[in-house]
Length: 393
Image 1 (tube, rainbow, N blue to C red):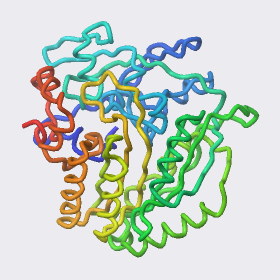
Image 2 (image 1 turned 90 degrees about the vertical axis):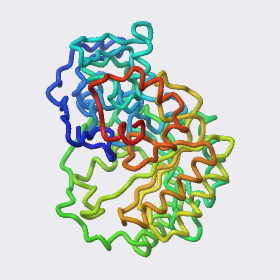
Image 3 (image 1 turned 45 degrees about the vertical axis):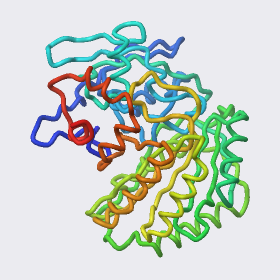
Image 4 (image 1 turned 120 degrees about the vertical axis):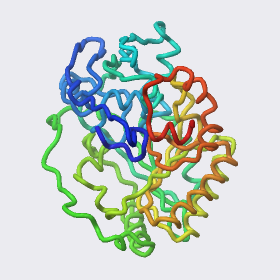
């Protein structure tokens, strides 16, 4: 859908294949929740078809403007990884077009190696043309949500453990990584609401960012002031509310062209996962490095990853803590900060997220994803991307 933050879907000097015309639904079993559709169908379109019948995506990234093929190729994850795992955990099968002209049917028991390489395979095994996906039953379009303020990382980990052990399906935290009290934040947890009295709403008029913001708008002082105000408002009380699924899962989809907030120079997202054995100290070190750098991250999202493993060879999540940070592009100084963050992630045994990456060093990719060579052996010889050239040679 052209929304990747990095270069996994770019091919400089070559050809790009758009799957948007592969937009047909093939089958939908309203009893079992199994849906089959062409790979260009978006998550938004799946929701429009399935939700009126009581079905929803098993897990979802932070935007619904993603194709089924893109969701499989990047093995996307959501706020319920500790329960549902990744998108690939729910794929029954797929159809793959190879450059030799063949159409390969792939499933856990058919072409298993190619199936595992394609889930999270960043498009390198060929063109995904169809996907069969298991949806999950939901009572309606709303979730019961709770916001809880925490003052430091220890409280964040306590809330994560408590929520994961309880009945909370969706958990995530906003974290302040700019102020002197880096590590404080707001923990949000939610479950599907059993109250079905509210009418089903799937969308509405969206505000838009009309022009690129000036480059100086997101500076340390403005982000620090915003974070202080946001924390104080949210921390004033534990807040319980009933929210629409769009507000819970897709807040940025509500603002068209939100990326213009970062100006014409754009932004990078630095997204990593840290293993449980090193997550506390490594996350504390990351936040300290960011706070001392003077470079603001306007958005800092933290959540725990659970034990459920994906069938994908190059799936990003593993048990531990995940953090996603958006940084305005400040050129050399931003790249220098990333190099310092890379060293912290590598020392902890963590990895970066290829789906959101535009600059990951090859050595960090290879150590973080040791099965990359296996994928390379199953790669379609006539498929290439800027990302794969950069990290795999």
